[in-house]
Length: 511
View 1 (tube, helix red, strand yellow):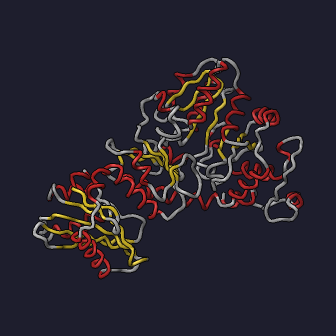
View 2 (cartoon, one colour):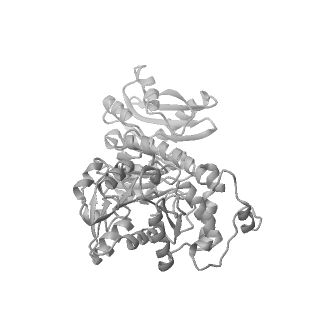
View 3 (spheres, one colour):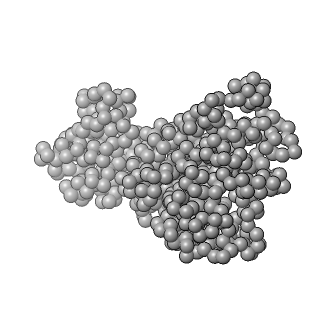
């Protein structure tokens, strides 16, 4: 895949392409159009690469947006009184096409949850069913569907029914719908494929000649093709798709693990996590990327969480180099999923996150700060502290960390003040990684507890980093830590926040 993203062929470019590219290293921008969209050399260079990545036997077609590609499918293959089956948590633009536009032309739709029992689709087949629309992972709840099983069921029932898969979240690198039995693979080029948040585009790939001929004919009719300049930008973005996706996934996995243990988060949806409901589908089909979703706990304030973010940008797009976060209930899906709520599965507390390429520690620190504010804003307003006792406790943890510094090892240091005013410390060592293991803080605290210092009044846990001996971050207590501290003293104070702006909170406020 890495080679195909750059050359679209393992043997490199052909002699004809060398001439067409004017002996350049990359395809030039041909701004003139011929009679057919595919006759533009810049567009052709992009479509050739996409054809290879999607493992299609027919040339990929590009469009001015992902929705333009979706509309082209609907206008080409659906007519009055036809019926379509769509996953019930699809992208809001797709939902709006079927609910608000096609319904006016007597084209009927059924929205179904196909993630748990694929065979349930047989209960919704009608004599006039012409299209099955899948997303895996879905937007925004990150559900997976078994593309191979559903495609087999559909085609066994009626081979004329078209199965289309929106592959935007996964990208061609992590999932191949056509190889799994789908008829059409749709991608929003705006997202991961371009990857730089500066282009809007879409594409359709397929194996069937009959489908391709109809779409090509209507592409010229609709004039929704992608401009040569945008084709050039997307083709350029494709060069780095593999390396970008690997980093997106690495960051997303670490952040999903962090979110799973945060007290403000009720549930995390990331396909590569064993806790994901369709993790078994992921293991055989793929589908993970930089996208994850999570549900905040009931008492969390979603708007306060979004307002507290500094590094992460609150925006509705995804797949770029920057981390983007949004609330589907407030932003993207307000008029669709939350208006009809057909299956009751959409929480008002759901957050969708496109994990970017920033340093993962910086993303985690921003999330941690914002999540803490979302559940404790009133308490935080009253507990921002310049208390010298707290600063002294933090300094003691730093001092111990400096004294025990080891190369390539993070030092987790807990420091506590007892009710009598004495200070004690405990440590835990772990190999360098992006976040502490779940037992790191527990081990550091237990080192003190085992020595009999159980009359704690205030506690702080710091992580020091081996690559920068002067860099520290306050660790928010994990579930096990909170239980341990609460068992020792339910009125104990915990220092959270940052070393520059520490916040003192009662352990009961964190449980």
